[in-house]
Length: 173
Image 1: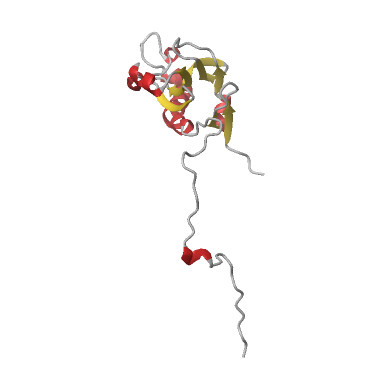
Image 2: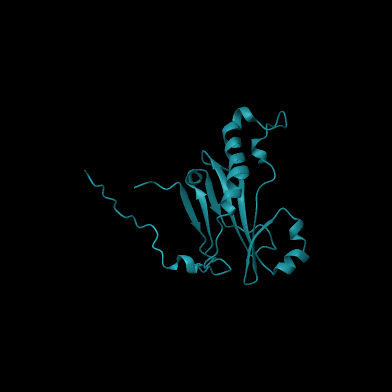
C-alpha cells in the first residue's frame, strides 16, 4: 500500500478541509485564538521548530459579513485574500509579510542565517511555495461545482462500442 504524502485538516466548527504536505505535521501547530476583533473565527497554523513556536505560516479567518460588506469595509485592499463565501460568512486567509523577529540577531539587527538558517529556509518554503498550493485545496462541506455536468453523447457515437478489442487470428498456410 502506498503511503500518502498529504494530510487533511478538517475544521470542527465550519467543516472546511485543507490538504497539507505530510511533512508539515512536524513543523506546524494549530491555534484557534481570535486576535482580530472583526473576525468571528480564526485558525492559525503556527511554525514550530525544535519545540519552539515562532509565528504563523498561514491564518484562516471567518467573518460574519456579505461580499458587499467585505468590499465596502476595504478588505479587498488588505493583506487578507478571499477564499469563499457561504451563508453570510466570508472565509479568507493571510500569510506573514516578513520573518518573525526571533530570527533577528540583536547585535546586527539583521536576520541571523548562521543560527537560524534551516528554520528560515523552511518557513520561507512553507509561505512562498506550499501555502499557495494549500489554499487551492480549501473546500467547504458540500462544495460542489456550480454547474452540473451532463455528458454529451453524439448520435454518431451512440451505437459504437469503444474499447472492445477483437481477436485477430492468422491463418497458417
